[in-house]
Image (cartoon, rainbow, N blue to C red; front, side):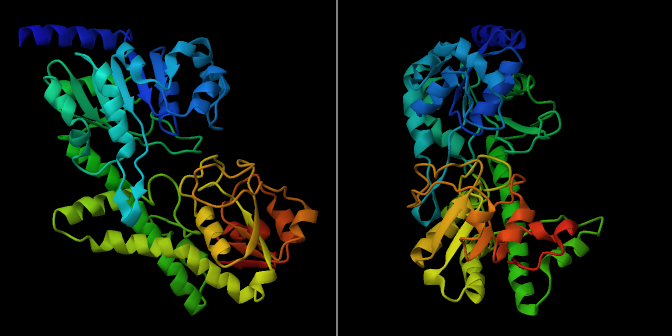
Length: 438
């Protein structure tokens, strides 16, 4: 193995000197920020994405994610050959990081098709002494399954290196930084782990090295399962409190004064984002495959999924003639102040309105129109928030509490406002009388 060790040491040296190149597969909400972090460290970055519009935008030096400044994207404007929809540029990279989506199919079955396709596309261009890393959220054992052909082709840990490091992005959080947030690192072998730790050391202050890839894969699922279960808990609490005529917000606010053993979670209009509505089902699915039906995971998912329908039932109590009513939906993003609408509860609300023949429009500063592929039959365009428009609607429902919205104006000119985000619980809005909290 002396020849292996010698070339491995050369790779270590190459990475240590920042003279290596890195290819990011998937330039979305995880991949593009990752590119920027390595670009800031003066490391050569290549980007691969199947979306030609994204590639074209980056070549012009334009960011399609609002939280990422164009000044960092100028790198690609000056290095247009570093971008492609063709995987052949992988051959120019020493390190490849895959950041592709892992959605669900029907019946909450994991959909690994994006990873499987990428694996096939990458295969012809891989060579010895490359590092291949997966960042996508997956069920335990997926990394080995997806990369099984590479495990046969190379001598893993000696002349090829595989690892897993789940993303911990927090879209829209201006204070998010890997100077504060640790990153989980795992490798197929000790040599793989050492390389991953070195690669991420340029952009992450603290790395948490795990004993196995499966531990890292499962830890990512637990992070989001924790939130899913606690959100389900407060969503169920909301339903109970409505039955008992108790203010849910006041209950949570009071409980949160306990300075140990309690963390505040707030109810909302349903689950959104790329993690919480999906990831728990990955763990549930693999658990069932091994003979155990996870009760808590499934129950939490059921509660959170039913919330949009429960909201409709509350609306019906105030809007009796729903067929002639028109409702304005505020917010399409899955959380405030971001241009990310993945799995947004707004779309579930729209589907329910369509099914019940309730007319609606929407407003969101981040979405002038509904994106293609969001599985919602809605060709509407966002309308402006002004007194004239607000007066047209029988009701307004706040789905996403963007800071951009003028809530004083909304309450002043709206007939009734359904607040699913407790916006009007803030002291400055307490005099508003046309607010219904649901």
